[in-house]
Image (cartoon, rainbow, N blue to C red):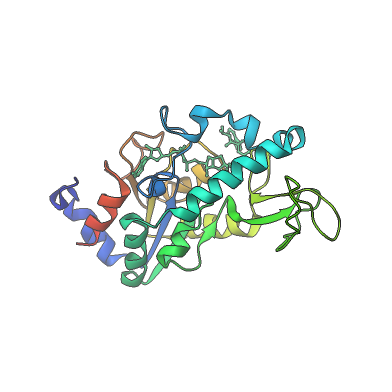
Length: 244
Ligand code: BJW
């Protein structure tokens, strides 16, 4: 448990005075909803699968059925999960600060289901589907047992609308997030290992200006020594404690 006394008063004061807060979230915020993170050595998604076998366009080209089925399994896991107190605390935080920009690397939609709005999804959303050849979103397809399914109009293979290694992030979304990080009063990095770029470099926009930065994570990251405050603990306990 995180004792509210462990949240430094200096941070609480700065949060109360802030005009614009940016929160970047990663898989760790959904861990308490039962969704495995990627890089946990025992339970992480990459403990059982190699990223290059599942999260690259080449992997899909090589074995589209394997990749589609892996995402279908994750979609079911996420559909059964519920947002946790960490997701909900960010809904409350948005009501308390004049401006909150919520940026997520997660594809699980749990921030939306908790009630957050205007979320910048850097890596897409697992519940959207697009054509592999031209990235056009497809809403419906025939359930004829073909895996992966094909676009009814063009017969192109369908894939999840997520960002794989080697692919560009949605440019407008990344630019918006970078601009927010470049002008905010406080940048929170929550539940991310900060190993994947360009998401991991967003905090640099705030650090460069000498802005206040906060890491919420039970473990260490490459940014731990650079941030203004490190709050060591699970997001589902630390984020609600910040609001008390
Ligand atoms: C808790 C907790 C609790 C546990 N509470 N916390 C610069 C340098 C080197 C390489 C590159 C570079 N720029 C680009 C690259 C290449 C590459 C990259 O970053 N590689 C690195 C691995 C080195 N990046 C890309 O390819 C990106 N595209 C790009 O840059 O395009 C331009 C370009 C193209 C071609 C060539 C060059 C440039 C795209 C990256 C796409 C990432 N996609 C994935 C999969 C998404 C779909 C899916 O979900 O399947 O995104 S990979 C995976 O990692 C997923 C995540 O969003 C992302 C980040 O992971 P995250 O969220 O940090 O999770 P974990 O597991 O790593 O960490 C969890 C953390 O939670 C831990 O710290 C725990 O301690 C903590 N935790 N419980 C709070 N209760």
